[in-house]
Image 1 (tube, rainbow, N blue to C red):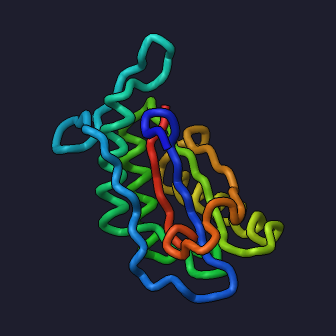
Image 2 (image 1 turned 135 degrees about the horizontal axis):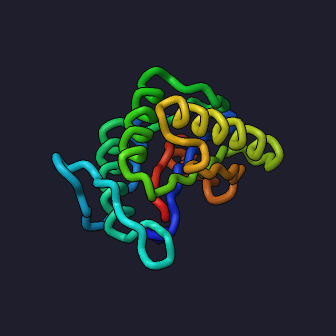
Length: 170
């Protein structure tokens, strides 16, 4: 993924088994941060094309990585329910993204079912619940793009199928 080009919250879960062993990690971004005061991303600026500049996107991404490395967003197998801990994490994500007015968040969700229709349905439920929770945390709905990926790209990868990843976008 290109960090400066898309924001991704990949929420995934496994199908019929309980392989979420709590060891899943969110990937770290290899980006240099453009931060505001106290290490938080600043408002950011628009480039000549009316999009967020790369520094604003990278600064937000660094903050999101800190939040998600401390408390990854995970779903239980076959579930779109959020725990209180996950809700608290998503509130922090919404607050961090809200501080950078020009950067958007994309929510991509997955589910590890072999049945693609079932995986698509669950991943859509997850995309919806994450989007709603980000809005409840204060992030404007028009700054969140959600796409349900079904089981695409998560076959055999229980950590990826159970963990949410957030990336900042222009």
